[in-house]
Amino acid sequence: MNLETLQQSMYTLIVETSTNLPKDVRRAVKRAKERENAGTRAAMSLDTITTNIKMADDNISPICQDTGMPTFKIKTPVGVNQIHIQKAIYAAIEQATKDGKLRPNSVDSLDGSNSGNNLGPGTPVIKFEQWEEDYIDVRLILKGGGCENKNIQYSLPCELEGLGKAGRDLDGIRKCIMHSVYQAQGQGCSAGFIGVGIGGDRSSGYDLAKAQLFRGVDDVNENEELRKLEEYVLEHANELGIGTMGFGGETTLLGCKIGVMNRLPASFFVSVAYNCWAYRRLGVAVNAETGGINEWFYQDGDDVSFDSDQPEKQEVKSESRVVTLEAPITEEQIRELKVGDVVQINGMMYTGRDAIHKHLSTADSAPVDLNGQVIYHCGPVMLKDENGQWHVKAAGPTTSIREEPYQGDIMKRFGIRAVIGKGGMGPKTLQALREHGGVYLNAIGGAAQYYADCIKGVEGVDLMQFGIPEAMWHLRVEGFTAVVTMDSHGNSLHEEVDKTSLEKLAKFKEPVFA
Image 1 (spheres, rainbow, N blue to C red):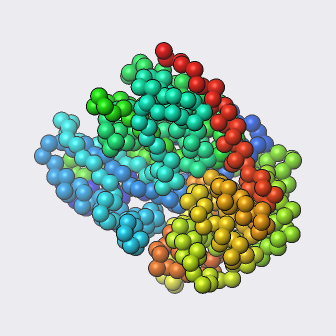
Image 2: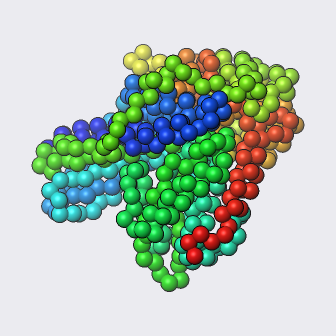
């Protein structure tokens, strides 16, 4: 096999997976957009999502700034050297990272250092198996940390909030799956897709669940019981009212795929792998002799172009105000904002993720004066040009709830007035917003190209020792749009949607498959 050709094939697969959503996923997103009520926050979110998909195509840049954990499932003919394939993948991963198609995401679990090239113990994930075909089947999924964190595993029997007892039967499985959608809320960038593994042990159950995400969105389960269960979940999960980004709405789930395997008598696990709307998985058939690509997978059926969507921008309902802010922001300006307001930010904002928040919680001072400023929960994809100037290649929001232990204290200590992220935050932050005069703004998760376009310059960077995603980037923005979902008056859209969706979840307590 020509290793240079194989490496190029793997590089092409990685770039396409990161920048180009497959046709089956595009069709699912289009269906969601068509059934959403016009003029709502959910409709605005879906408009942003489809715009972002088109921009990623045009720019050949990451759909989402979190390019996730590259996970390969590979089937090889007997006699093919799997070590050569692994080496080709490593080289392709390193090149794709250097070219800004992947964000450097491989971090040492003990000291937090970033390898800088997405290589390290356990990354990327490569799973091989042999088969009797004469070609190599390579599948790749890029599953980001936000949706990975919403994976969940149940051990039956158990008690589930809103649903009561889940037993060791099909109805118990059904309750677990419905609960898994509820608990994700908007933190996993809904509307999402789920893969479910029934049985196995704790590790094989999760492997089975993630393997379901390699199925086509439109395929039909050969197991009749599982087919009915998939259809049930897809229909009724969309009655929970969680909606796109957790803003409420008609579409919460875009796909549900379920697999089953045997288990030990003492164990009964239901494992759920949650995937965001940016469902980045593709596959190729590789010639075992040349290393070239013979065929692409997940590209059957009608193509979907979102070009026609561009001139027609959704506006949120008229009761929502549009407010323009520029930092430094005063407490008076913040106190005027209420949940539902749309905010457009011009001027400066500063990125801050997990490492920054931990650092600021104990540091004597911040790298810059944060009084009246905006913190953006974002780990961007960055590239440096030949003149040494940094450029933003992708910059969507990360899941904010991870910063809950720190956020309120940091806002009060440094005078921060606004925080931007996705998925909302908890009661500690909400209390701090009320006491301090702060606001939480929800940006559209996964819309990394849409927001990168709002960033007009990189004015500086601090704390680069934490790695590119975790550094504090100084960004000059224009028209950066987000929705107030937690205000300084104690109101939280996330709390409200959680409460109403839990009430709706309780409707599904009674047996269905008895």
